[in-house]
Length: 272
Image (cartoon, rainbow, N blue to C red; front, side, top):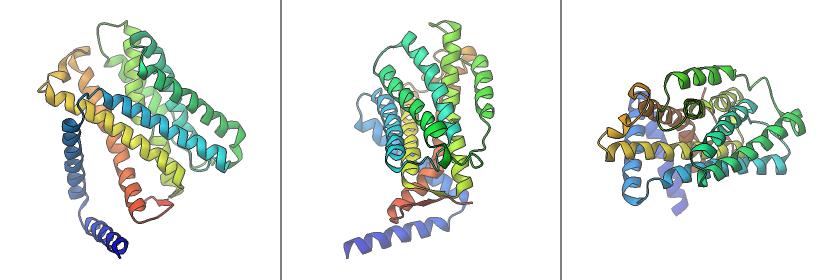
């Protein structure tokens, strides 16, 4: 009985939000996200842990893909182009990280990078027969080229060498749009099987945590964090905007993921 009432309440909630306009839904989503950020600020003492959690969840999402590829022997629903863009920015970030930090972030990036290369290998060679190239039709150069140009124009200044700064900026910009080919493929396919949905949802949670870190730092420094260093004082605002863009890109998918999970649907249906 309790379960039936719970499901009914969820159905009533989603039926109610369906009647709302897109603007109202967006406003409610922003308010809910800000409330979550505020709760994280008061519950997590060391806000640097957000980045570690974000990178760990990203790595966990890749391991979900590895499980899918090894157990189900199919790569259907996965975007090779998203994985290739991910491998590109992880490789560049690893080179920067070895120069700048060499800490837990480097280890997590290395583990994610190696796992991503393995996923690319499986899609390209071992499971190529199940890869639907026609659905994975988002051009990579639409993502990589603008990210590279923007990195040359807006990047952090001291204390690192100019090339390292440009490379780091490229990582930030390209990561913010790397999921677009995967979302395009899912829109084309209309149906998303569970493991692919788990992976993309993990990316959404990872980006939300990273974005929360930026927002909390901006709040705690009364906005000064945005103007600490950067080419023409544009670097931190541009980096923050990149985090916010990727979070909102994934927010719509995460909404439908949670909705499908609450309704007990194993296969996620994407809207037209």
